[in-house]
Image (cartoon, rainbow, N blue to C red):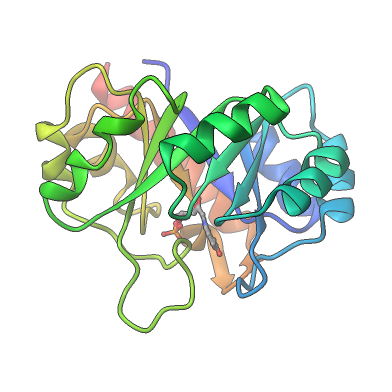
Length: 218
Ligand SMILES: O=C(O)c1ccccc1NCC(=O)[C@H](O)[C@H](O)COP(=O)(O)O
């Protein structure tokens, strides 16, 4: 089974190196000022250079304007733009025309009806990421370490290619893989010892758990 693994919100060389050594197919950098994982595009670009040919570089933005996207794209040179805000299909078409990069559009989920919001984006975004809705009072649209009911994903059209995220960690990732058709999984706070602080031991434990899950699914 081919499963993409994205480690998101990286900000140190140690964590970038370990994630990719352990098999991360995607690494994500957060460009959102309120996030403890927010990173300057220049620094993200330097970290990405360490692993560029081995993992896809994902720029995570939230309703970013063209000026900010210009900076991010020119300094990071991402492979994928992850749009984690309220971007419309029209905005996504504009961004794709500007940069010629694949777009992964994020939807937050609490109930089955949240999944229908994807319909106008099919054929517009290249891939989808389903995350949990932010808890009340959170400043962050992602990276909150909370899960949603993965059984809801069964009602999604089978043709939709998606990554799953939201509160994944070493203890629940096997269950997430077994109970959905996700072609990728994405983790951030589940491999952190404190908000924004990635922990290489926790990255190891996460990849060990994914390896066990894949072995058991064969
Ligand atoms: O992680 C952040 O701080 C963040 C801030 C603003 C927008 C998106 C953000 N994270 C995006 C991600 O792809 C996270 O990996 C995803 O939300 C899962 O996070 P977690 O539940 O902590 O594993």
